[in-house]
Length: 587
Image 1 (cartoon, rainbow, N blue to C red):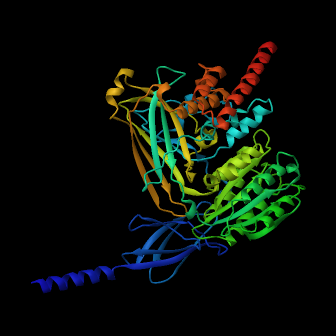
Image 2: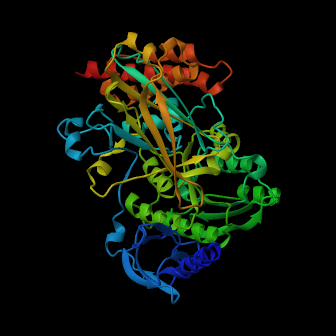
Image 3: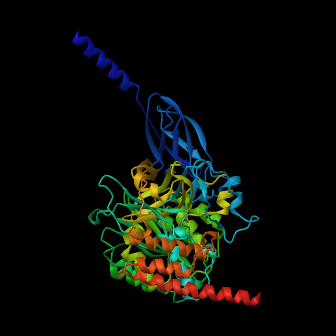
Protein backbone atom coordinates (compact mmCIF):
# COMPACT_ATOMS: atom_id res chain seq x y z
CA UNK A 1 0.00 0.00 0.00
CA UNK A 2 2.84 2.41 0.83
CA UNK A 3 4.53 1.95 -2.58
CA UNK A 4 1.51 3.10 -4.67
CA UNK A 5 1.00 6.12 -2.38
CA UNK A 6 4.66 7.03 -2.71
CA UNK A 7 4.48 6.75 -6.51
CA UNK A 8 1.29 8.86 -6.54
CA UNK A 9 2.98 11.56 -4.44
CA UNK A 10 5.96 11.61 -6.83
CA UNK A 11 3.62 11.97 -9.81
CA UNK A 12 1.70 14.81 -8.15
CA UNK A 13 4.94 16.60 -7.29
CA UNK A 14 6.23 16.20 -10.83
CA UNK A 15 2.95 17.50 -12.21
CA UNK A 16 3.15 20.48 -9.84
CA UNK A 17 6.71 21.26 -10.89
CA UNK A 18 5.77 20.90 -14.52
CA UNK A 19 3.09 23.56 -14.02
CA UNK A 20 5.71 26.17 -13.08
CA UNK A 21 6.85 28.55 -15.80
CA UNK A 22 9.43 31.32 -15.67
CA UNK A 23 8.34 34.57 -17.28
CA UNK A 24 11.35 36.68 -18.24
CA UNK A 25 11.63 40.04 -19.94
CA UNK A 26 12.51 43.70 -19.64
CA UNK A 27 10.80 47.09 -19.55
CA UNK A 28 12.18 49.93 -21.70
CA UNK A 29 11.09 53.33 -22.95
CA UNK A 30 10.69 54.43 -26.57
CA UNK A 31 14.41 55.22 -26.82
CA UNK A 32 15.28 51.72 -25.55
CA UNK A 33 16.48 53.03 -22.19
CA UNK A 34 15.86 50.52 -19.38
CA UNK A 35 13.15 51.46 -16.88
CA UNK A 36 13.91 50.21 -13.36
CA UNK A 37 11.33 49.92 -10.58
CA UNK A 38 8.37 49.67 -12.99
CA UNK A 39 5.32 48.15 -11.26
CA UNK A 40 4.28 44.80 -12.83
CA UNK A 41 0.83 43.50 -11.80
CA UNK A 42 0.31 39.82 -12.66
CA UNK A 43 -3.40 39.43 -13.43
CA UNK A 44 -3.76 35.72 -12.56
CA UNK A 45 -2.60 36.19 -8.96
CA UNK A 46 -2.93 39.92 -8.29
CA UNK A 47 0.68 39.97 -7.06
CA UNK A 48 2.81 43.06 -7.68
CA UNK A 49 6.41 42.83 -8.88
CA UNK A 50 9.08 45.39 -9.89
CA UNK A 51 11.63 45.56 -12.69
CA UNK A 52 15.28 45.61 -11.61
CA UNK A 53 17.96 48.27 -12.13
CA UNK A 54 18.46 47.14 -15.74
CA UNK A 55 14.70 47.08 -16.39
CA UNK A 56 14.71 43.25 -16.38
CA UNK A 57 12.30 40.99 -14.47
CA UNK A 58 11.77 37.30 -13.79
CA UNK A 59 8.47 35.94 -12.42
CA UNK A 60 7.33 32.38 -11.64
CA UNK A 61 3.87 31.71 -13.14
CA UNK A 62 1.63 28.63 -13.08
CA UNK A 63 0.69 28.62 -16.77
CA UNK A 64 2.56 29.39 -19.95
CA UNK A 65 0.55 32.52 -20.81
CA UNK A 66 -0.74 35.32 -18.60
CA UNK A 67 -1.40 39.05 -18.74
CA UNK A 68 0.16 41.99 -16.91
CA UNK A 69 -0.36 45.68 -16.21
CA UNK A 70 2.83 47.75 -16.13
CA UNK A 71 2.92 51.27 -14.69
CA UNK A 72 5.57 53.86 -13.86
CA UNK A 73 5.32 57.54 -12.92
CA UNK A 74 5.62 59.73 -16.02
CA UNK A 75 4.67 56.92 -18.46
CA UNK A 76 1.47 55.55 -19.97
CA UNK A 77 0.15 52.41 -18.27
CA UNK A 78 0.50 49.29 -20.43
CA UNK A 79 -1.68 46.17 -20.36
CA UNK A 80 -0.23 43.25 -22.30
CA UNK A 81 -0.50 39.51 -22.82
CA UNK A 82 2.76 37.73 -22.02
CA UNK A 83 4.18 34.26 -22.55
CA UNK A 84 6.92 32.31 -20.81
CA UNK A 85 7.80 30.75 -24.17
CA UNK A 86 9.78 33.84 -25.22
CA UNK A 87 11.72 36.75 -23.73
CA UNK A 88 9.26 39.66 -23.29
CA UNK A 89 10.31 43.12 -24.46
CA UNK A 90 7.76 45.62 -23.12
CA UNK A 91 7.84 49.31 -23.99
CA UNK A 92 6.28 52.18 -22.02
CA UNK A 93 5.49 55.47 -23.72
CA UNK A 94 6.05 58.79 -21.97
CA UNK A 95 2.97 60.80 -21.14
CA UNK A 96 2.48 63.61 -23.67
CA UNK A 97 1.46 66.22 -22.72
CA UNK A 98 0.39 64.83 -19.35
CA UNK A 99 4.03 64.27 -18.38
CA UNK A 100 4.20 67.92 -17.37
CA UNK A 101 1.42 67.44 -14.84
CA UNK A 102 2.89 65.93 -11.68
CA UNK A 103 0.59 64.45 -9.09
CA UNK A 104 0.42 66.47 -5.92
CA UNK A 105 1.83 64.76 -2.86
CA UNK A 106 0.13 64.69 0.52
CA UNK A 107 2.10 64.95 3.75
CA UNK A 108 -0.76 63.66 5.90
CA UNK A 109 -4.00 61.91 5.03
CA UNK A 110 -7.26 61.04 6.80
CA UNK A 111 -9.07 58.08 5.33
CA UNK A 112 -12.49 58.82 3.73
CA UNK A 113 -12.22 62.57 4.46
CA UNK A 114 -13.32 64.33 1.28
CA UNK A 115 -12.36 67.88 0.15
CA UNK A 116 -15.89 69.15 0.80
CA UNK A 117 -15.57 68.01 4.41
CA UNK A 118 -12.71 70.50 4.79
CA UNK A 119 -14.71 73.51 3.61
CA UNK A 120 -14.83 74.98 7.10
CA UNK A 121 -11.02 75.00 7.29
CA UNK A 122 -10.77 78.28 5.41
CA UNK A 123 -12.38 81.69 5.68
CA UNK A 124 -13.83 82.76 2.37
CA UNK A 125 -11.42 80.45 0.56
CA UNK A 126 -8.45 82.39 1.92
CA UNK A 127 -5.53 81.26 4.05
CA UNK A 128 -2.38 82.96 5.30
CA UNK A 129 -0.13 80.52 3.46
CA UNK A 130 -0.23 77.68 0.96
CA UNK A 131 -0.31 75.22 3.87
CA UNK A 132 -3.74 74.44 5.25
CA UNK A 133 -3.58 73.71 8.98
CA UNK A 134 -5.02 70.40 10.16
CA UNK A 135 -8.37 70.78 11.94
CA UNK A 136 -10.13 68.66 14.56
CA UNK A 137 -11.63 65.49 13.08
CA UNK A 138 -14.41 63.32 14.53
CA UNK A 139 -12.90 59.98 15.54
CA UNK A 140 -16.12 58.02 15.19
CA UNK A 141 -16.59 59.09 11.55
CA UNK A 142 -12.91 59.26 10.52
CA UNK A 143 -10.91 57.08 12.95
CA UNK A 144 -7.86 56.52 10.69
CA UNK A 145 -5.36 59.24 9.87
CA UNK A 146 -1.64 59.29 9.18
CA UNK A 147 1.40 61.13 7.94
CA UNK A 148 4.60 60.65 5.95
CA UNK A 149 7.64 60.08 8.14
CA UNK A 150 9.82 62.74 6.52
CA UNK A 151 12.92 63.69 8.46
CA UNK A 152 13.46 67.15 6.99
CA UNK A 153 14.55 69.84 9.46
CA UNK A 154 15.04 72.83 7.16
CA UNK A 155 12.18 74.93 8.47
CA UNK A 156 13.67 75.54 11.93
CA UNK A 157 17.08 76.76 10.72
CA UNK A 158 15.34 78.95 8.14
CA UNK A 159 13.12 80.43 10.89
CA UNK A 160 16.23 81.06 12.98
CA UNK A 161 17.79 82.99 10.08
CA UNK A 162 14.76 85.27 9.76
CA UNK A 163 14.63 86.00 13.49
CA UNK A 164 18.39 86.60 13.66
CA UNK A 165 17.84 89.20 10.94
CA UNK A 166 15.13 90.82 13.14
CA UNK A 167 12.56 89.93 10.50
CA UNK A 168 9.11 88.36 10.83
CA UNK A 169 8.89 84.82 9.51
CA UNK A 170 6.62 84.21 6.47
CA UNK A 171 3.88 81.77 7.59
CA UNK A 172 4.66 79.68 4.50
CA UNK A 173 8.16 79.03 5.89
CA UNK A 174 6.85 77.49 9.14
CA UNK A 175 6.43 73.72 8.98
CA UNK A 176 5.75 72.77 12.57
CA UNK A 177 6.78 69.12 12.21
CA UNK A 178 10.24 70.23 11.02
CA UNK A 179 10.55 72.59 13.98
CA UNK A 180 9.57 69.73 16.26
CA UNK A 181 11.98 67.21 14.74
CA UNK A 182 14.96 69.54 14.47
CA UNK A 183 15.85 68.61 18.05
CA UNK A 184 17.03 65.26 19.41
CA UNK A 185 14.83 63.41 21.87
CA UNK A 186 15.45 60.58 24.27
CA UNK A 187 16.43 57.72 21.94
CA UNK A 188 15.48 54.13 22.73
CA UNK A 189 16.88 51.32 20.60
CA UNK A 190 14.10 49.39 18.79
CA UNK A 191 13.75 45.62 19.36
CA UNK A 192 16.52 43.70 17.57
CA UNK A 193 14.16 42.28 14.94
CA UNK A 194 12.45 45.63 14.22
CA UNK A 195 13.22 48.74 12.19
CA UNK A 196 11.12 50.95 14.47
CA UNK A 197 10.50 51.26 18.19
CA UNK A 198 7.58 53.22 19.66
CA UNK A 199 6.84 55.19 22.79
CA UNK A 200 3.60 57.03 23.59
CA UNK A 201 2.14 58.94 26.51
CA UNK A 202 -1.00 61.02 27.08
CA UNK A 203 -0.72 64.24 29.05
CA UNK A 204 -2.36 67.60 29.67
CA UNK A 205 -2.72 70.28 26.99
CA UNK A 206 -1.21 73.56 28.32
CA UNK A 207 -3.37 75.81 26.14
CA UNK A 208 -6.67 73.96 26.63
CA UNK A 209 -7.32 72.20 29.98
CA UNK A 210 -10.30 70.34 28.50
CA UNK A 211 -8.11 68.56 25.97
CA UNK A 212 -5.16 66.18 26.13
CA UNK A 213 -1.96 65.73 24.13
CA UNK A 214 -0.86 62.39 22.71
CA UNK A 215 2.92 62.22 22.25
CA UNK A 216 4.01 59.65 19.69
CA UNK A 217 7.73 58.98 19.28
CA UNK A 218 9.22 56.53 16.78
CA UNK A 219 12.89 55.58 16.92
CA UNK A 220 14.56 54.07 13.86
CA UNK A 221 17.26 51.44 14.23
CA UNK A 222 20.90 52.46 13.92
CA UNK A 223 23.11 51.00 11.24
CA UNK A 224 26.14 49.20 12.65
CA UNK A 225 29.10 51.54 11.84
CA UNK A 226 31.04 48.54 10.52
CA UNK A 227 28.17 47.66 8.19
CA UNK A 228 27.55 51.11 6.68
CA UNK A 229 27.39 50.43 2.93
CA UNK A 230 29.78 52.09 0.47
CA UNK A 231 28.61 55.45 -0.84
CA UNK A 232 28.43 56.82 -4.36
CA UNK A 233 27.97 60.55 -3.71
CA UNK A 234 27.67 63.24 -6.35
CA UNK A 235 27.95 66.79 -4.99
CA UNK A 236 25.90 69.00 -7.31
CA UNK A 237 27.05 72.52 -6.40
CA UNK A 238 25.53 75.78 -7.58
CA UNK A 239 28.40 78.18 -8.41
CA UNK A 240 26.26 80.75 -10.22
CA UNK A 241 26.55 84.49 -9.60
CA UNK A 242 23.78 84.45 -6.99
CA UNK A 243 26.02 82.24 -4.77
CA UNK A 244 28.66 84.99 -4.45
CA UNK A 245 27.84 85.86 -0.83
CA UNK A 246 29.50 84.80 2.46
CA UNK A 247 26.46 82.78 3.60
CA UNK A 248 26.19 80.87 0.32
CA UNK A 249 29.10 79.27 -1.60
CA UNK A 250 31.76 79.89 1.12
CA UNK A 251 29.43 78.29 3.69
CA UNK A 252 28.86 75.25 1.46
CA UNK A 253 32.59 74.87 0.86
CA UNK A 254 33.25 74.90 4.61
CA UNK A 255 30.53 72.28 5.20
CA UNK A 256 31.67 69.93 2.45
CA UNK A 257 35.31 70.11 3.59
CA UNK A 258 34.19 69.08 7.08
CA UNK A 259 32.22 66.19 5.61
CA UNK A 260 35.27 64.92 3.69
CA UNK A 261 36.89 63.84 6.98
CA UNK A 262 34.31 61.04 7.34
CA UNK A 263 34.83 59.55 3.88
CA UNK A 264 36.28 56.06 3.49
CA UNK A 265 38.31 54.34 0.79
CA UNK A 266 35.25 52.44 -0.42
CA UNK A 267 33.28 55.68 -0.90
CA UNK A 268 33.23 57.37 -4.30
CA UNK A 269 32.91 61.16 -4.54
CA UNK A 270 32.18 63.22 -7.67
CA UNK A 271 31.45 66.91 -8.07
CA UNK A 272 29.25 68.47 -10.75
CA UNK A 273 29.02 72.27 -10.91
CA UNK A 274 26.66 74.59 -12.70
CA UNK A 275 26.95 78.34 -13.23
CA UNK A 276 28.90 79.96 -16.04
CA UNK A 277 29.27 76.39 -17.30
CA UNK A 278 28.03 72.90 -16.47
CA UNK A 279 30.79 70.37 -15.97
CA UNK A 280 32.16 67.47 -13.98
CA UNK A 281 34.44 69.43 -11.65
CA UNK A 282 35.79 66.34 -9.89
CA UNK A 283 35.57 62.94 -11.65
CA UNK A 284 34.72 59.89 -9.48
CA UNK A 285 37.36 59.79 -6.72
CA UNK A 286 37.95 57.46 -3.77
CA UNK A 287 37.14 58.92 -0.37
CA UNK A 288 40.69 58.16 0.78
CA UNK A 289 42.02 60.94 -1.49
CA UNK A 290 40.93 63.64 0.94
CA UNK A 291 43.49 66.28 -0.10
CA UNK A 292 42.42 66.03 -3.73
CA UNK A 293 38.73 66.36 -2.82
CA UNK A 294 39.32 69.28 -0.43
CA UNK A 295 41.40 71.17 -3.02
CA UNK A 296 38.69 70.62 -5.62
CA UNK A 297 36.12 72.11 -3.23
CA UNK A 298 38.36 75.04 -2.27
CA UNK A 299 38.93 75.99 -5.93
CA UNK A 300 35.21 76.60 -6.58
CA UNK A 301 34.42 80.19 -7.61
CA UNK A 302 31.00 81.71 -8.38
CA UNK A 303 29.81 83.30 -11.63
CA UNK A 304 27.22 83.06 -14.41
CA UNK A 305 23.53 82.10 -14.57
CA UNK A 306 21.78 79.20 -12.83
CA UNK A 307 21.05 76.33 -15.27
CA UNK A 308 19.71 74.07 -12.53
CA UNK A 309 17.87 71.59 -14.75
CA UNK A 310 20.94 70.74 -16.85
CA UNK A 311 23.08 70.41 -13.73
CA UNK A 312 20.64 67.95 -12.17
CA UNK A 313 20.54 65.86 -15.34
CA UNK A 314 24.34 65.65 -15.48
CA UNK A 315 24.57 64.72 -11.77
CA UNK A 316 22.08 61.89 -12.17
CA UNK A 317 23.89 60.56 -15.25
CA UNK A 318 27.16 60.53 -13.31
CA UNK A 319 25.53 58.86 -10.30
CA UNK A 320 24.08 56.15 -12.53
CA UNK A 321 27.43 55.52 -14.19
CA UNK A 322 29.01 54.81 -10.76
CA UNK A 323 25.97 53.01 -9.28
CA UNK A 324 26.83 50.70 -6.38
CA UNK A 325 24.38 47.84 -6.01
CA UNK A 326 23.34 47.67 -2.35
CA UNK A 327 25.21 50.90 -1.65
CA UNK A 328 24.20 54.45 -0.78
CA UNK A 329 23.75 56.17 -4.14
CA UNK A 330 22.91 59.84 -3.69
CA UNK A 331 23.05 63.24 -5.34
CA UNK A 332 23.59 66.11 -2.88
CA UNK A 333 22.24 69.32 -4.40
CA UNK A 334 23.56 72.50 -2.75
CA UNK A 335 22.06 75.79 -3.91
CA UNK A 336 20.18 78.96 -2.99
CA UNK A 337 17.27 77.56 -5.00
CA UNK A 338 17.41 80.27 -7.65
CA UNK A 339 16.79 78.16 -10.78
CA UNK A 340 16.52 80.90 -13.39
CA UNK A 341 17.51 79.07 -16.58
CA UNK A 342 15.83 76.02 -18.11
CA UNK A 343 12.98 74.31 -16.32
CA UNK A 344 12.16 76.66 -13.48
CA UNK A 345 8.70 75.74 -12.14
CA UNK A 346 8.27 73.38 -9.19
CA UNK A 347 6.08 71.06 -11.30
CA UNK A 348 8.69 70.66 -14.04
CA UNK A 349 11.52 70.07 -11.60
CA UNK A 350 9.25 67.69 -9.72
CA UNK A 351 8.73 65.61 -12.87
CA UNK A 352 12.45 65.57 -13.69
CA UNK A 353 13.45 64.18 -10.30
CA UNK A 354 10.54 61.70 -10.21
CA UNK A 355 11.73 60.07 -13.42
CA UNK A 356 15.29 59.65 -12.10
CA UNK A 357 14.53 58.41 -8.58
CA UNK A 358 13.28 55.15 -10.10
CA UNK A 359 16.94 54.13 -10.41
CA UNK A 360 17.39 53.96 -6.63
CA UNK A 361 19.38 57.19 -6.39
CA UNK A 362 18.42 59.44 -3.48
CA UNK A 363 18.46 63.22 -3.49
CA UNK A 364 19.53 65.34 -0.53
CA UNK A 365 18.99 69.09 -0.88
CA UNK A 366 21.00 71.68 1.03
CA UNK A 367 19.67 75.22 0.90
CA UNK A 368 21.66 78.36 1.69
CA UNK A 369 20.94 82.10 1.76
CA UNK A 370 17.51 81.80 0.24
CA UNK A 371 14.87 84.48 -0.08
CA UNK A 372 11.50 84.25 1.60
CA UNK A 373 9.94 81.45 -0.40
CA UNK A 374 12.79 79.82 -2.28
CA UNK A 375 12.85 76.75 -0.02
CA UNK A 376 9.63 75.45 -1.61
CA UNK A 377 11.53 74.34 -4.72
CA UNK A 378 14.11 72.36 -2.75
CA UNK A 379 11.45 70.82 -0.53
CA UNK A 380 9.63 69.48 -3.59
CA UNK A 381 12.83 68.15 -5.15
CA UNK A 382 13.94 66.36 -1.97
CA UNK A 383 10.60 64.66 -1.39
CA UNK A 384 10.22 63.56 -4.99
CA UNK A 385 13.85 62.44 -5.02
CA UNK A 386 13.20 60.08 -2.10
CA UNK A 387 15.55 62.05 0.13
CA UNK A 388 15.74 64.87 2.67
CA UNK A 389 16.15 68.63 2.85
CA UNK A 390 18.21 70.80 5.20
CA UNK A 391 18.82 74.54 5.37
CA UNK A 392 22.29 75.77 6.35
CA UNK A 393 22.19 79.21 7.93
CA UNK A 394 25.67 79.08 9.48
CA UNK A 395 28.77 76.88 9.73
CA UNK A 396 27.54 75.27 12.94
CA UNK A 397 24.44 74.04 11.09
CA UNK A 398 26.61 72.75 8.25
CA UNK A 399 28.65 70.74 10.77
CA UNK A 400 25.48 69.45 12.43
CA UNK A 401 23.98 68.18 9.16
CA UNK A 402 27.11 66.96 7.37
CA UNK A 403 29.20 65.66 10.28
CA UNK A 404 27.32 65.09 13.55
CA UNK A 405 24.14 63.79 11.90
CA UNK A 406 25.79 62.35 8.81
CA UNK A 407 24.32 58.85 9.16
CA UNK A 408 20.82 60.27 9.68
CA UNK A 409 21.27 62.56 6.68
CA UNK A 410 22.79 60.09 4.23
CA UNK A 411 22.03 56.50 5.29
CA UNK A 412 18.44 55.32 5.06
CA UNK A 413 16.96 52.42 7.03
CA UNK A 414 13.42 52.77 5.62
CA UNK A 415 11.91 54.23 2.46
CA UNK A 416 8.37 55.35 1.61
CA UNK A 417 7.57 55.26 5.33
CA UNK A 418 4.02 56.28 6.21
CA UNK A 419 2.35 56.01 9.61
CA UNK A 420 -1.34 55.23 10.15
CA UNK A 421 -3.04 55.72 13.49
CA UNK A 422 -6.49 54.25 14.11
CA UNK A 423 -8.12 56.04 17.06
CA UNK A 424 -10.51 54.27 19.42
CA UNK A 425 -13.71 56.39 19.39
CA UNK A 426 -14.62 55.00 22.83
CA UNK A 427 -11.91 57.25 24.29
CA UNK A 428 -11.31 59.89 21.60
CA UNK A 429 -14.12 62.17 20.51
CA UNK A 430 -12.03 64.36 18.19
CA UNK A 431 -8.35 64.70 17.29
CA UNK A 432 -6.04 66.94 15.28
CA UNK A 433 -2.51 66.30 14.10
CA UNK A 434 -0.25 69.26 14.94
CA UNK A 435 1.88 70.09 11.91
CA UNK A 436 2.27 67.80 8.90
CA UNK A 437 -0.01 70.26 7.08
CA UNK A 438 -0.81 69.81 3.40
CA UNK A 439 -0.62 72.34 0.63
CA UNK A 440 -4.02 73.60 -0.50
CA UNK A 441 -3.25 72.53 -4.06
CA UNK A 442 -2.58 68.94 -2.99
CA UNK A 443 -5.83 68.77 -1.00
CA UNK A 444 -7.83 70.09 -3.94
CA UNK A 445 -6.19 67.69 -6.43
CA UNK A 446 -8.24 64.52 -6.85
CA UNK A 447 -5.11 62.74 -8.15
CA UNK A 448 -3.09 63.47 -5.01
CA UNK A 449 -1.11 60.61 -3.51
CA UNK A 450 0.32 60.08 -0.06
CA UNK A 451 4.07 60.68 -0.22
CA UNK A 452 5.99 58.36 2.09
CA UNK A 453 9.24 59.54 3.64
CA UNK A 454 12.85 58.40 3.97
CA UNK A 455 13.98 57.62 7.53
CA UNK A 456 17.68 57.81 8.35
CA UNK A 457 19.77 55.64 10.65
CA UNK A 458 19.03 56.28 14.34
CA UNK A 459 16.51 58.99 13.59
CA UNK A 460 13.79 59.84 16.09
CA UNK A 461 10.47 61.07 14.67
CA UNK A 462 8.08 62.92 16.96
CA UNK A 463 4.39 63.67 16.39
CA UNK A 464 1.85 65.30 18.71
CA UNK A 465 -1.95 65.01 18.52
CA UNK A 466 -4.36 67.23 20.41
CA UNK A 467 -7.34 65.10 21.40
CA UNK A 468 -10.76 65.78 22.86
CA UNK A 469 -11.38 62.79 25.15
CA UNK A 470 -14.69 61.11 25.90
CA UNK A 471 -13.71 60.41 29.50
CA UNK A 472 -12.96 62.41 32.62
CA UNK A 473 -9.47 62.80 34.09
CA UNK A 474 -10.24 60.57 37.09
CA UNK A 475 -10.99 57.64 34.76
CA UNK A 476 -7.57 57.56 33.08
CA UNK A 477 -5.62 55.60 35.71
CA UNK A 478 -8.21 52.82 35.80
CA UNK A 479 -8.04 52.45 32.03
CA UNK A 480 -4.27 52.32 31.44
CA UNK A 481 -4.47 48.86 29.89
CA UNK A 482 -7.08 49.94 27.36
CA UNK A 483 -6.10 50.76 23.79
CA UNK A 484 -6.28 54.43 22.84
CA UNK A 485 -5.23 53.76 19.25
CA UNK A 486 -3.61 51.23 16.97
CA UNK A 487 -0.47 52.35 15.07
CA UNK A 488 0.84 50.89 11.82
CA UNK A 489 3.93 51.92 9.88
CA UNK A 490 4.13 50.99 6.21
CA UNK A 491 7.65 51.08 4.76
CA UNK A 492 10.13 49.49 2.37
CA UNK A 493 13.69 48.44 3.01
CA UNK A 494 16.18 50.61 1.10
CA UNK A 495 16.54 49.41 -2.48
CA UNK A 496 13.62 46.97 -2.13
CA UNK A 497 10.10 47.14 -3.56
CA UNK A 498 8.44 44.88 -0.98
CA UNK A 499 6.07 46.57 1.45
CA UNK A 500 6.52 45.91 5.19
CA UNK A 501 4.15 46.69 8.04
CA UNK A 502 4.99 47.01 11.72
CA UNK A 503 2.40 47.72 14.41
CA UNK A 504 2.08 49.06 17.93
CA UNK A 505 -0.82 49.12 20.35
CA UNK A 506 -0.98 52.59 21.91
CA UNK A 507 -2.16 52.23 25.53
CA UNK A 508 -4.20 54.84 27.35
CA UNK A 509 -1.24 55.76 29.53
CA UNK A 510 -1.77 59.15 31.18
CA UNK A 511 0.77 61.26 33.09
CA UNK A 512 0.41 64.80 34.42
CA UNK A 513 2.27 67.33 32.29
CA UNK A 514 4.97 68.04 34.88
CA UNK A 515 5.61 64.31 35.30
CA UNK A 516 6.29 63.41 31.67
CA UNK A 517 9.82 63.26 30.25
CA UNK A 518 11.31 66.80 29.97
CA UNK A 519 11.99 66.25 26.26
CA UNK A 520 8.24 65.89 25.65
CA UNK A 521 7.55 69.11 27.53
CA UNK A 522 10.24 70.81 25.43
CA UNK A 523 8.55 69.38 22.31
CA UNK A 524 5.30 70.98 23.48
CA UNK A 525 7.01 74.38 23.63
CA UNK A 526 8.28 73.86 20.08
CA UNK A 527 4.81 73.12 18.69
CA UNK A 528 3.42 76.18 20.47
CA UNK A 529 6.27 78.24 19.00
CA UNK A 530 5.46 77.08 15.47
CA UNK A 531 1.74 77.71 15.90
CA UNK A 532 2.31 81.23 17.20
CA UNK A 533 4.62 82.05 14.27
CA UNK A 534 1.92 80.84 11.88
CA UNK A 535 -0.69 82.92 13.73
CA UNK A 536 -2.75 79.76 14.17
CA UNK A 537 -6.20 80.10 15.68
CA UNK A 538 -5.10 77.42 18.18
CA UNK A 539 -2.46 79.78 19.59
CA UNK A 540 -4.91 82.42 20.86
CA UNK A 541 -4.72 81.29 24.50
CA UNK A 542 -0.96 81.65 25.06
CA UNK A 543 1.93 84.01 24.33
CA UNK A 544 5.71 84.03 23.94
CA UNK A 545 6.25 84.17 27.71
CA UNK A 546 4.19 81.00 28.20
CA UNK A 547 6.30 79.19 25.61
CA UNK A 548 9.53 80.32 27.24
CA UNK A 549 8.37 79.20 30.69
CA UNK A 550 7.65 75.66 29.48
CA UNK A 551 10.90 75.47 27.47
CA UNK A 552 13.02 76.87 30.30
CA UNK A 553 11.80 74.32 32.84
CA UNK A 554 12.14 71.45 30.36
CA UNK A 555 15.49 72.26 28.72
CA UNK A 556 18.57 70.10 29.04
CA UNK A 557 21.30 72.50 30.36
CA UNK A 558 23.98 70.57 28.45
CA UNK A 559 22.17 70.91 25.11
CA UNK A 560 23.38 74.04 23.31
CA UNK A 561 20.56 73.95 20.76
CA UNK A 562 17.90 73.94 23.47
CA UNK A 563 19.63 76.85 25.20
CA UNK A 564 19.71 78.72 21.90
CA UNK A 565 15.96 78.14 21.46
CA UNK A 566 15.29 80.21 24.58
CA UNK A 567 17.16 83.10 22.94
CA UNK A 568 15.19 82.59 19.72
CA UNK A 569 11.91 82.85 21.65
CA UNK A 570 13.02 86.20 23.09
CA UNK A 571 13.91 87.50 19.63
CA UNK A 572 10.52 86.43 18.27
CA UNK A 573 8.78 88.08 21.20
CA UNK A 574 10.49 91.43 20.53
CA UNK A 575 9.91 91.32 16.77
CA UNK A 576 6.25 90.33 16.90
CA UNK A 577 5.35 92.52 19.87
CA UNK A 578 6.92 95.55 18.15
CA UNK A 579 5.11 94.72 14.91
CA UNK A 580 1.77 94.46 16.71
CA UNK A 581 2.27 97.81 18.44
CA UNK A 582 3.23 99.42 15.13
CA UNK A 583 0.07 98.13 13.43
CA UNK A 584 -2.07 99.48 16.26
CA UNK A 585 -0.45 102.92 16.02
CA UNK A 586 -1.05 102.97 12.26
CA UNK A 587 -4.71 102.21 12.83
